[in-house]
Length: 223
Image (cartoon, rainbow, N blue to C red):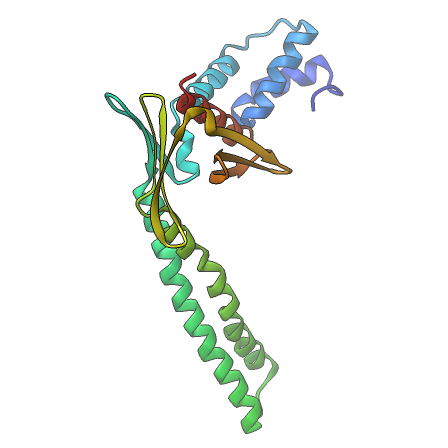
């Protein structure tokens, strides 16, 4: 990323470190060290350390819609209230858009059936309203998440892993050893799995998400 930049250009980038992504900050730090450039990297180092600390404290689990808590004898991961409310809102909005779209489809069909004469703009609006059916359907993905993660719990207690998750609507509890927990990468997806069951899926290309799942896996396995 920075190999083709001169030392002067690299120092100019360093001045703007706060605007860089976490991955870019790490690459910049490595490039400065490899070239042996003498520069004040205190701000960059602090930003990187802060990000790593937040990752280790599972603050970015909220990006998945989850939170982690450490109790006396248990490490527990649950769904956040905000994520649940977002899914509920998505379902409600999806229903509204879907029914508006259905009404738009009926309106559009009746326009052709009755042979009404309308201008191009009005026809475009009617097509757009009918298209809301498909937009509404896309929002229904929140419904699946609601079913999948209502009552969700992932916990480590005394070396054992307990997963509470809905499979085919029914809330089930799976108990397993920490050794059954692992990360599986499939092209651009990184999945946290317990046996054959997928718990979380993240973007493997996103460094923060990847490191968050790696830290979570370590914590659940007791490492």
